Length: 189
Image 1 (tube, rainbow, N blue to C red):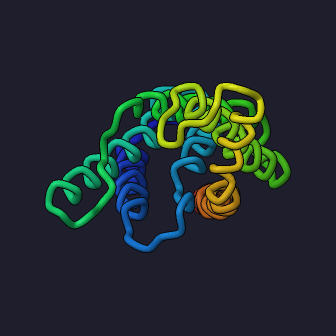
Image 2: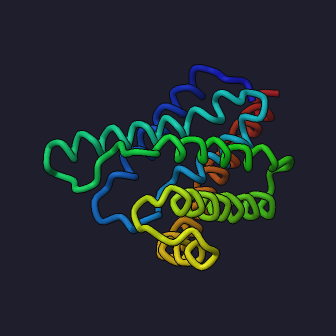
Image 3: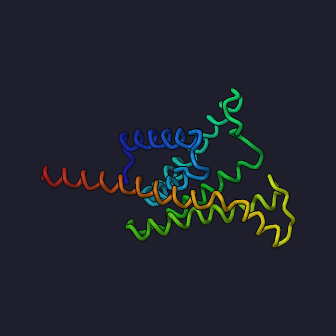
């Protein structure tokens, strides 16, 4: 895909809207668009990898900045920045590579990537929490690791649902825009 001024504006708006959505109070935990953005970016911007990585990472960073501002203002109990957060950003970079694996954009491939990405995130992020002893101190045994995965289970379904939902929105919107552009081109020809 050729990066035009319109594409850049659309990406900036998408990034900002997704960042604002992530900080909405009362939103179900784990129900956020950033994983779908990573898959979408990887699948669509295969020839412009910097854009593929930029949208979800900038969206995460912007929402983390907003969380931090709200935290210091006493509006939110959740800080935007915390120890070990860099691992989360690395994970989102990894999730973008899941999108690179979508060689042909169709319903099945997008669905599989939309299930694989949050699953990879769940497995790796909970493993990292267990190894770091962050939050809940679980024993460094197989049983402790399973306890850590169990601790993360309440977030996993919403992560799956949101990734599938936002992938439908992103890939569906992209398909409709591409179809509209093709129709206009055909009318001009």
